[in-house]
Amino acid sequence: MAEHDWSDVQRLKQYEGNPTILNLKYDEKYEKLMDYCRAIIQSNEISIRVYDLTTSLLNFNASNYNLYIIRRKCLQQLNLDLDQEMKFVNDLTFKNEKCYQIWEHRRQIIDWTKKYDYEIQFLQEILGSDNKNYHAWQYRIWLCQQFNLFDQEIKNVEYFIEEDVGNNSAWNYRYFLLVHLDFDFEQELKYIKHQIELKPTNEAVWNYLRGWFRVDEQQNKHQKFKQFKYQEYDIVDFVDKYVKEDVRFAIAFIIEIKVHEKQFEQAIQLCLRMGSDIDPIRHNYWNWKIENIKKLQ
Image 1 (cartoon, rainbow, N blue to C red):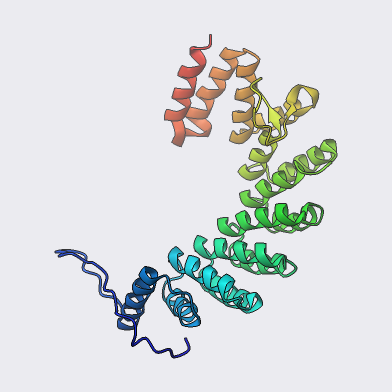
Image 2 (image 1 turned 120 degrees about the horizontal axis):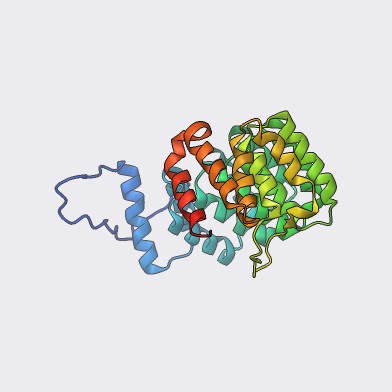
């Protein structure tokens, strides 16, 4: 942080009461800077020295959301360079990849500048270190919606599925993209079946398959997702093949279908099979499921 004169500011100490346990010992520099920060929050000062103060403090603690609010006020009211701000945000994000306050600040800056060309490359780097980073995927969804990137992103997401077919985040993102596009569901179903054939025990792709089909008649009043009737596709025959191979995700899917078709005894027998042999760690759940099916008989 550039050196600034703070002699005109009365340091405002943090109220600590009289704790008998968990006394926190702060770094002396951090404590001093936070004293100044509390003081400028009271005075509502907006200046270069305040902006630089937030820089120093965020390097100590990147999750302090108040600092980002103050920082954005400085950026706007002082008309500061937003490209330089993004360089700072990039560096800070790479050091704190799962700090949601940084991601929200990033979203705000990109929303102001509309300069999103680097963002997909940036996300590739972030997801390269953790391909299930929740904050990165949430930001990617916002980016896609904000700048209409659906067509290019449906190609990009295949990289993550090929890299890790069990990546739930990538499958969820694929679903999000497709419901915003015109697409051939028959082709998508072939793609799903192929992925299941490659690794039948992959829970992520089974969840993805299940998500496309409406088993009950309840409609989604918000209409935020798209589903198809399983009866109109050869889905039962396909899933049955894996039921015979004791794939628990396939059996769970078939149980739902059996209940929907009022084949209650068959559904109960499958639940017993799951609880005793295939998925015993969740036997209490399957017993609960059986009790609920019996109530429908």
